[in-house]
Length: 160
Image 1 (cartoon, rainbow, N blue to C red):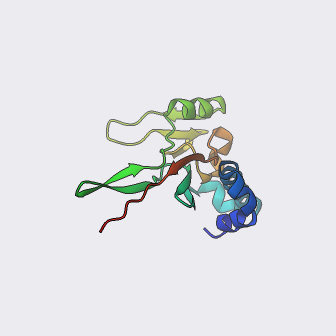
Image 2 (tube, rainbow, N blue to C red):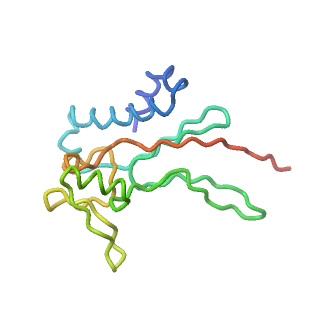
């Protein structure tokens, strides 16, 4: 929670010049830091999703790893509706599943009972997302920390 902002602050010039590359590199670096330090044991068996939003004027870059969603509330008439700013990284998405299977992982389909598709690493774990920070037991089976970075221009409207 505190390490990634510090990494981005230390890389400020790159962040302003190339937000996509900087956000990607530093999320991946955070994952590496977890496995190189005292959190290694925790990071092997557990992990987290990640949404990092970086604002510059009326622009926002959303770097997402996992299945937590960033949403923008937008006024539509007298209602406020949610607009997705990130995509969920589910293991049964074609590109995600192909990467996992190339690495030797197995993807089970969603269950009829509403259970999600899962990544199975050596027949265990059952991770319901294809990207995460941590979850080291799944890394060799195609689960990656690499965020998908999207860019949006916000157009705020002033109301009286």
